Image 1 (cartoon, rainbow, N blue to C red):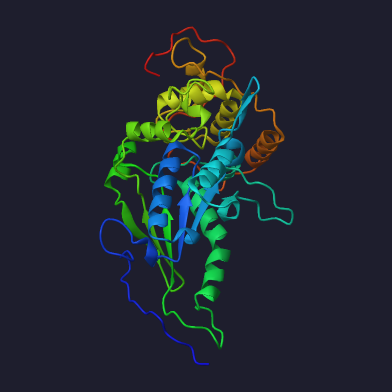
Image 2: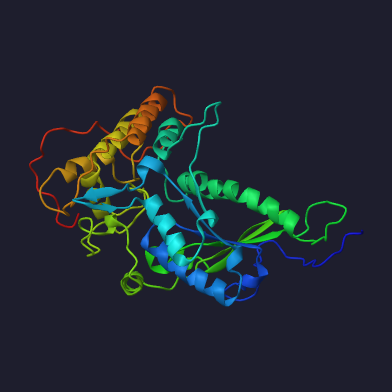
Amino acid sequence: MASETLYSPTLEQGRTITEGPAPDLTQYDVITNNLSGGKDSWLMACLAMQEAREADVEERVYSFHATLGALEWPSVQVGTEMFPSVSTLAALQSSASGLPADRHLESTKMTQDDTPTVYDLLTYVAAYGRFPRLGTRFCTKAYKEQLEETAMTPIINQLKVTLGLASTPTARKIDRPIRRLKVLGLRSDESRDRAERPAYRNISSNSIRHTDEWCPAKDWTTQDVKDFHAASGFQHHWTYDSYPGAGDWEGTSRCSCSFCVLSSKRDLIIAVRRRPRLATLIALVEAVRGDTFQAGRSMHDLIELSQQKGGPDPGVVLNDETPEFEAMEKAVRAALSRPPRKEIDRATLNRPRLPLLTEPSAPCDARC
């Protein structure tokens, strides 16, 4: 039987599948809700699934979470109540939004040796020799985008067969790439860069895949997101609160990675006070490699500041005595024993010192 051409559009590079400020979901073969486990992810998942139901394309939707392992905010038990980790909450968000468990994908970066093990981001930084920066966020590319592409490859390959793109004698030929819609929870009031980013845009296109990006919550304010959480009754991650279960949104403003290079000073002070062992390990990477955690702020300085009086109370302090953390610390120290892949020739501050163990006397700036 001769193959049959069903559809053969021609799209210019950079053009989205559908015209206008928002996508027509019926024009996509697969839709991926990218869940970080944060507050914006829950809103995004609900908005995307509502649109998918109205378009009758729920069966095309998957969710994806790229876990950062020991660097993510872990689960914590207070009394008899267990508050979930970021990864667990991302899976709960997927399920609560209406997706079956087999359509939630989770992926971790692994080493490429004969016996693969988790290759955490801090070990990657220690081996590379530099921390990520705004404009060079290799953490996003290597630990989120590439993992998602790899996780979606088997699904894309199956769609080629299902939709007739595979070269078989009886295949109905669809003369076009697989169309994928990548859905994110980015919002305008998070940063200037995100405010200028179109809510709907094309991010890649070739003969195999055409991928567009959609941010359905882009124009929602932070207060809108909090109100949505309250109205939905769905839990937000414990790190957003002053202590697990407080429900006051007085903790960190970010979720997922405990120490993000884009975090505010206040968020980082809370993180240092909540995870002092992890902060000390990051400071060790600074001291050995000569780069600073942020362009204008070192982890050593943050540790000193966190030991002073004043500023936000952590609410809970994690000992990080887990096999996962022990494995990461061992891998980081091993990476630091070898020369870095990238020599530091533009360190923004003087070479960081190792963290002090003495109690500083100066008061903490209340604004921290």
